[in-house]
Image (cartoon, rainbow, N blue to C red; front, side, top):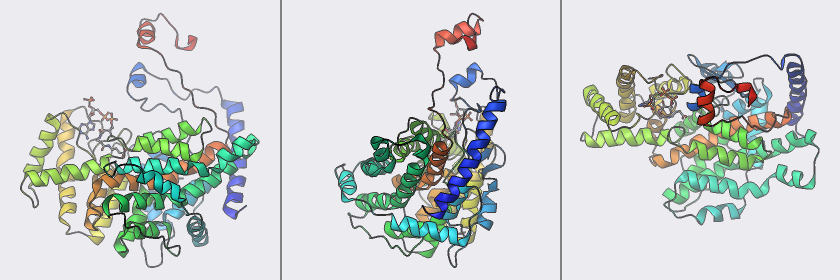
Length: 441
Ligand code: CMX
């Protein structure tokens, strides 16, 4: 057993004992009351899930094991000569709960490089799809084809003690994270670069190797990938991709099945697909206005047209956040440092000045501020990655870090099959009239 796995086991045993005590001594304590509106409107704000890796504050943004994004950028180990955190370090922090050393990060980089082999039949499965298939479809098909490699599924079929579930989940997690960049890069090169694939370079860190396999060896792009892979990794447990991964995993589905399910949720336009929608929206605006940098009043008109067409402004709003997303700010800072004069970036910043007051005036939008997806596309276009339908795949590779670390915790803590209660509208009406009791169901 590697030392990170041993360390995880020690932490998991400690927390399992604490959770048992918590349930024994306080299990009946009420967390909240649930309203009829919450049941119909996406269960906002109901504290019904436990996720150890990160916690989201509506006004401050995400904290990973207590660390904000600016703190992570200061405190996590960097690549030699680099200024952005290595996502290997963030994964360690989410899994173990402590800041990693340089050695911990190198250990993970090396382990993921060693485990990165992807069998040919995975590529064949992707090849079987038409070239017109969306990159997220190809990505998920690749992950599903790789499910044959699941250590957990094999061990379960042979018969294992439930105390050992976490160990097999850990192996699947490490193997899957190691292999995802290869699958994602294959999708990209197949769809956009005439199938001219690039072999991995095992000497590079996880993000730099991903950038290399995509075909971008520019140091600036590698730094962007390190930042991108760090900030998109986790956003506590209730978002669609994290919740779906956790939900499917609660049936003891292995990491491949659970993560592929989460990726199908990420592929929705109200979630991860918003990153492609943002750039598509900006490019159509620019084209409609005849190119160049639009004026603020032109942007304002375009936003109003989007709204009157019954569409959302992509990249703005959030189910939990009520301020500018610190993941947006981190990308803005990256742009100010590396590409302050980029035309598309300047449009993104003008959109940032224009959209919030318009959304605020609608009176119904709870958060008029930009989310993570509002900025990412402009940075990618700058370095030449213009094929925006691919952007959600990048988000997906990063999201694996958080949701798979969480799956390890789910199995280590022995979390139960998820099965909330549902009711019918008929029942809701009777409840509203006081004719049935919530507890009676
Ligand atoms: N543009 C226009 N209308 C918006 C809006 C936006 N950016 N954000 C919210 N609204 C509207 C909602 O559609 C809703 O309208 P109806 O009452 O007519 O249905 C109303 O405002 C209230 O919505 P809300 O409570 O503020 O927001 P929700 O929690 O329901 O939804 C989200 C959150 C993200 C789906 C929504 O803000 C949105 O659609 N944003 C644009 C898509 C986007 O950027 N998604 C990415 C989110 C981050 C991520 O997961 O990657």
